[in-house]
Length: 164
Image 1 (cartoon, rainbow, N blue to C red):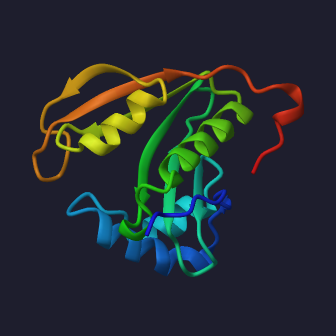
Image 2: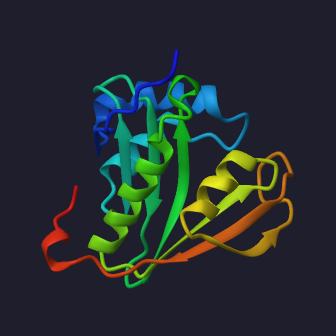
């Protein structure tokens, strides 16, 4: 049966999402996981955006973006899509929402790191205009290398500057 594509509802995470975020992390990543305390901090911190898709308490997918004061570049720290939702366009929708959030905060670029053994994520980022700029040896907790990618972000139109 083919998957039906419906527009993703993306919203800011709340403390009620922490259990769902932990479950998504556990199911998606073997190492370098975000802890319960870190999720709570990221959700509450004005220098981070945690965007999710799913009902409160049940997270289908999530993206985490970090911002530094006076920096013009945002850092996409994590993007995870639950196995049941892969192939639905949800990863691309979350990436677009993260980029819109970064533009609304005045950022002119987004950077990220991705495991060199994650072809699905690499393909998503490259399709969306990210350029590979460096290899980072032993970047991950388990010793795996990463690729660094960067994408320039066009300024948000004045009418679209409202935050999620």
